[in-house]
Image (cartoon, rainbow, N blue to C red):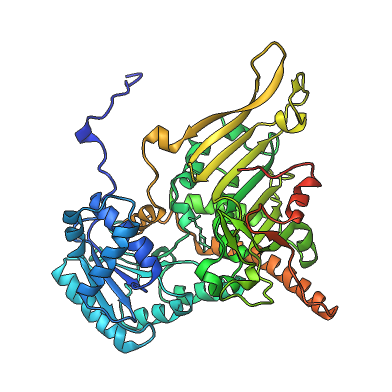
Length: 530
Ligand code: BG6
């Protein structure tokens, strides 16, 4: 036969949705914010959608004493408040009968002995298949002790013997680690070494919630499922790339945490470099964990490393000063609760990043992120080279009007749009930019699900594609630590000159300091207004 016709599969022949088998998830830090706001609502949604089985079992573990019933009541509050699905009593009852709780410390053998006994009891009563998922929703200071205790209590199966793996009972053990994953290269490396002395790399799922966002996953589909973009996705056609992740809140109650972190560690090292790697990577040979992550790590390795003395040229940092934000007055960052009065922690970063490879050489990637900016928005804008010769009058600024810009909007108003030039109606030929747009909401009639739903389901299914591998985390930290070293040097120089460093400021409610505008102005560019 020379050809076979395309036949639509009958509904019963279509592949089953991604439904997981039984498992027990232990949430360390179960009484905390992350569990209540994100994890429990996402798990409830997955059970409601029947993507997790009814007998999926959750065992909360933290220091605050609760009974099972009290913890269920707490969890219910979180689900009712934060779930993006409708709360239905019958679904809740189904979900709640699989929730349990154990009080214990994170670093004592006695607590972990009780944990082991409880897990084994639940293995029997809930038929978990001995599949175990340990989720570190705790402060990072206890990641290492928890992993140590899990190892000592013999709760970690030596290999991931999932159905495709080599184990005899087909059960698996996995560990999920939240950010911050270290605070510089040395600490990230030490944490990796420690976890890898207890778990196998394939058992460790490092969460970056940006990778669970629908529009972030759409970057790969957009690039590699459409024939027309890849040929122009390079230095021959792209002029530069702008990535903006702005937030219209101050540090709120997180001043204590944030002051030790700052925008570079909090947003750039993880979320923004992940976006850079997805936009810039070469096509993977398959859509699987190894192939995708191999290409991402190659791209991260191509980011030009900065010497300490170059940092001030490529990276701008600043702190917000008092200003109006959504009708409210925000104090200066240094006056926020939990922040040191002489803090030099940045609440804004802009970085001109150069990528040294054949695809991107000479195409700057401009990154900016900050708190207390006018809008909450995450977007990637690909600026194409302008038409080589402009034949027509334009209303203003021919440089910018003749340039096509492709905008991948990650949030809010998820979608993708392309700015093109069109003729204004009327007797004269006057140009005006217009948009061709795909909007997630109107095309699919739904808002995208919360990132944690996708990521939690992937962990249970054993798919690591959307999680960061050890080498990715470390190479990202390597480039970021160079910036931190440059800043340390600036601080030392200021101190030795007798004047402690003060960062440039920007008024809360504005798009950042003038130095960030200047970074683009000198290149005859400007930041896109989202
Ligand atoms: C977190 C940061 O990782 O991401 C927060 O620690 C930030 O400071 C948050 O507010 C932003 O996430 P999202 O999904 O709201 O863009």
